[in-house]
Length: 235
Image (cartoon, rainbow, N blue to C red; front, side):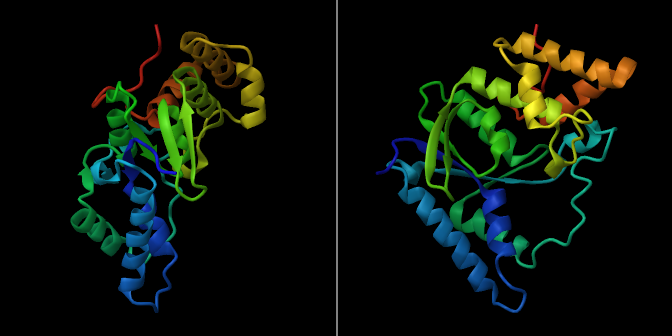
């Protein structure tokens, strides 16, 4: 079965996974072949695969300037895979991946999906963070597709605001994991109510500094839905 959507592909993760899987003593062609096979398998999963769009993160991500509690992605100290840059170049020139400057590829994916009011697109990624964007999502490792409604996307986002995101070095609330976050947000439906509950939890833990820390973390975690429009507290 193939899906009747335009795939919006997270090129960052494909390049990283394929280059990380290639041993240092193996030729670069092994890595590039792995990227090729991954892209082909994704495109084959969609009826409209030839209309695909792929994105890579460039430089000057605005989140680095917003982070004051902890450096954004400051925990990523390990050496990058040997052929990562070659994989990115191959993704750009062989697969026409767009390099996104000033923000992340995730933001470009989010904006493209949000703009498709006819629900004609599908985000292709294995990054759970993308589930904060409503619409179709395809996990190419599991070969699973799902539809995320707006309330579900908002709930996932505010769950992250409470738990943080260790992979990006965003702290969240000390002592709050997924189960505690779920309990805190239980029964809440509107985005405003989800936000106010998060504010209550932050103030409970961090006192007078709670609101500032919440706003910083939310701004770091928020994947753009419209180009250049950052997170703001819901009215």
